[in-house]
Length: 53
Image 1 (cartoon, rainbow, N blue to C red):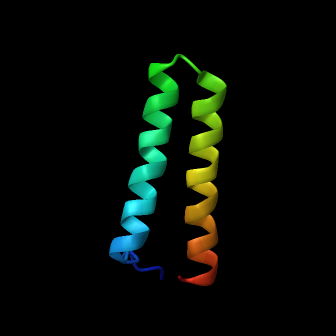
Image 2 (cartoon, rainbow, N blue to C red):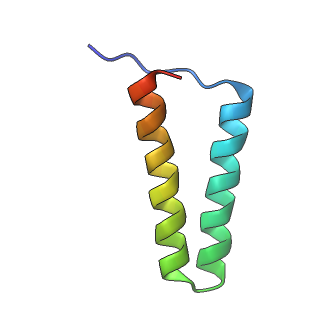
């Protein structure tokens, strides 16, 4: 059974900055840029889960 992982303060800040990048790309009507930013955010989360960082 998987348990929710806790984020360190630095990890949380990194995730927040990535979400801000998505928001900026959407405001610029740059859908591709927003999709790339979301992909990177999702990839970082997957990597963190794999290695239980």
